[in-house]
Amino acid sequence: MEAILLVGGQGTRLRPLTLNTPKPLLPTAGVPFLAHQLARARSFGVRRIVFATSYRASMFAEAFGDGSAFGLSLEYMTEETPLGTGGAIRNAAQALTCGPDAPVLVLNGDILSGHDITEQVALHVSRGAALTLHLTEVDDPTRFGCVPTDEDGRVTAFLEKTPNPVTNRINAGCYVFTRSAIDAIPAGQVVSVERETFPGMIDAGELVLGYADRSYWLDVGTPAAFVQGSCDLVLGRMPSGALPGPCGEFLALPEARVSPRAKISGGTVVGPRAVVGADAVVRGSVLDADCVIESGATVAGSVVGAGARVSSGAVLRDAVIGDRAVIGAGNELLAGARVWPGVTLPPRAVRFSSDV
Ligand code: GDD
Ligand code: MG
Image 1 (cartoon, rainbow, N blue to C red):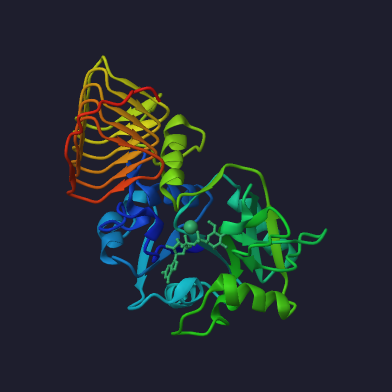
Image 2 (cartoon, rainbow, N blue to C red):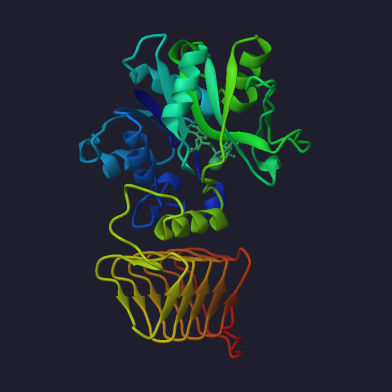
């Protein structure tokens, strides 16, 4: 089966991490995020994937090449200016080889999902649907596409980011399209599948189905979710065939130097050549390549960018530190604080508690 992978978004909510690296390529549990999705798609029989790229397009081919290292054949289609999710799917479809009746898998590029893709495709094919959406349940559906269904699993409406959701069931960002339904999307223009294509198909009476399940699911589009996803992969809560090796409470990548007196837990990744000093406490965090966590620093639920330094006695909790930034001693950064790449926060006289 062929698939289209949507990876053209700017990853705005993940800045500054995405200033230079597209969201789907951010190092996650030791490999680019997409490596987990590629391994998963392959395990369900996908062999050819067309990447729908736009933002920093060339970086995808540099990371994954022709796909042979993953047992896949990869193609890259690039939009000069972003065409939205629907325009991107239509544009990428030019590189598909299948016929009009074949099922085509379409994946958002920022999702970790444990669902059974084979079952989703089987439902689509057996009911002769035009489109079958994977659905999951979340506590706050307002940030997603809200998708009510009838008792036969038929989708009755698609309400993208509505302030008044009628159900907690949402679009989980993995679709099976019958190829001809993709070809019906207008070419060469900006189209949103969520706001135009899906509601249009439902209104036109086409058979749009929901495949609902309760397996692991996460959209890694925010810093908190990105950290959560990385930790869940390391801890094995979300199984992945792309992990670089066995993991325990944390994953130390090649040439990482972790003091035996450091306390590291919660699925933390210690990036290549990163250093964690004595009595540092690191919980549920992502430490990128070459960063330094000095002795006695505390880092929880945070991302520390490549080459950044967190000085002794500094405290990070739910913070994002850009590449090469320096957090001076005594600084306390909490609840969504972000430091841009290369910025230096001078040491502070007051020393905060390292109790997290
Ligand atoms: N090629 C291309 N071009 N890709 C794009 C474009 C574009 O213009 N715009 C967005 N994408 C890609 C993003 O890279 C991402 O992989 C995917 O499309 C979805 O975009 P997001 O920006 O992550 O959307 P969202 O998370 O707010 O909402 C979407 O996902 C939710 C599930 O996580 C919607 O599909 C919701 O309905 C859904 O519930
Ligand atoms: Mg998203």
